[in-house]
Length: 236
Image (cartoon, rainbow, N blue to C red; front, side, top):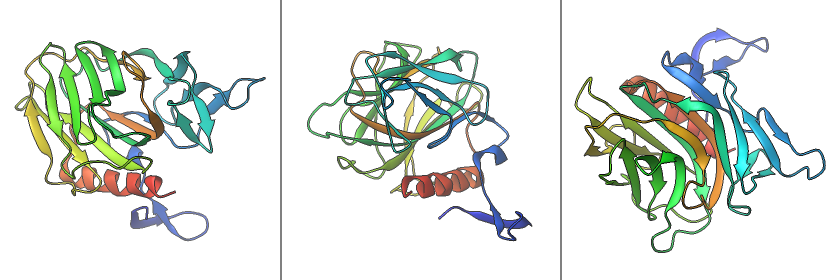
């Protein structure tokens, strides 16, 4: 289902597949089943996940993370992976998109996705609400535009923060609601960055397949192409 641009051919003559590197504001792209290293003895336990683009590495630093056919299982060992350096603390805008699934959607699940501290994080609060904090103590509880997620089913989620340059909107996208009808909240504080993937206070009870990070919001055209690409990864 990847989106072919129809211009430029690879060696086999087929149209080149669109990739996130086509978006100029791409900072880091942690690609499915790519640059994952595991422990020499316990060969299913992940040591690092290097980015395919950008020069960053995620390193397991709490609990443990398991490699599962190219996916990263944060659930079994309540794991967390830390970035080499704090990401995005100087940005006035950002976009973060993931392909993931969760193992339970009952009640208040508080699954941490990206985080730094109590004032900067992205958390799947319930099956239909994402809680985001941008540098302050006010919780932004944003409803997924496509409705509730299903346990053990892969989905795509995207968070874009417009920052002070536009209107400070937080916009949430997912793969079932299209790309032009997000749910919107507002946060006027300064972003303090993300430091880790997975457990901060609460564990992330699921698996993560892909992570793409940008230092801007996306144009509608780039967003559509990115979502199309990530849906193809979802369906691998």
